[in-house]
Image (tube, rainbow, N blue to C red; front, top):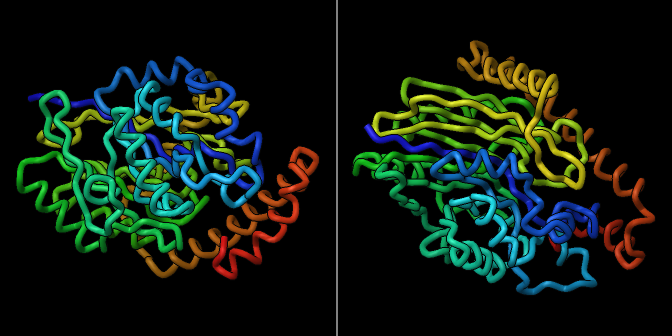
Length: 363
C-alpha cells in the first residue's frame, strides 16, 4: 500500500502586527530573506512528501500604503510566497479571518503569488477567486490521491468563509466516495485556550464519519490536543508556526508529522518547535523538548474522550477563555507601550485610535 508523509503546521503570518510594525515577523523575514527559516526546520519539511500550512495574512503589495498603519498591519511582501516554496511548503490554506483584511484584490493576488511559486492553494474558492463556494484541492502525492478541503468557521469581518458546515461536510463525503484521501484544513475555535470547545469536538467526529482521514486545525494560536479514531486523526489546533505574538503560551508549537494512505492514518508524531529570536521558529532540544512533549501529551489527554458533563465543561471553558482573552489584550498593549520609542511617531495616534475604529467597523 502506498503512503504519503505529510507535515502540517499552523498559522504562518508573514507580516507585522500593528504593535510591531518595523520589527515584527514580516520585517524579520525581510531582513533574513530565504534564510529566515533554519536549516533544521527545512530538513524536517524535506523529509515529507507534502507540507500544509495556514497563511494568516496577505502576501501582496496591492493597495500597500507606507504611511498607513492599517495598510501595513499583517501584510507580507509578495516575494514571501517564493520563500515559502523554498522552505518546503507545498499547500497553503487561505480561508481564515485575516485574508480579506486588505480587500479581495489583495487576497486574489496572494493566491496568484502562491500558485506562481508552485504552492497549491486551499480554501480560496474556484481558481483562487474568493467566490464563496466550497472546493477541494486535489493533489496526487506519491501516487496517493489527496483532497484538501479548506474551511473557515470564524465569524470575523475579514474572514473568507467558503461554505457552511453542512456544505463542507457534504464535500468531504463526496470526495471520500470518489476514492480520495480527504484532509480537512479548518480555521476554527477560540484563541489562546489549550483545548477545543464542544462544538469543535462534535464537528471533528462528524468529519471523521463523513470520510475525513485528517483534520488539521488552526486559529487558536496555541497547540491543542490530537485525537485519533481508528484510521483518522484530528489536530484541533497547530498553534503559531510563524507569528510575532509576545504572549507566553503562543511561543511554542509543533510540526504534525503524519503517514497516511488509502486505509487512513498509519502513524503520527508531533515535533516540538519553539519561537526563537526575531520570531524565527526552531526545533526544541534537550529539556525544553522533553517539557513540550509532556505538555503535548497532556493536551492530547484532554481530547481523548467527549466530556461526560458538557455543561460543566462549557462553564469552566468559558471562564478560562475570558481570563486568557483579558490577559492576551493586556499583553498586547503592554508590548506596544514598552516599545513606544521604536514606533514611528506617525503611527502613535493611528495605533491609539485602533480600538475606536474597530468598534466603528473601519479597521
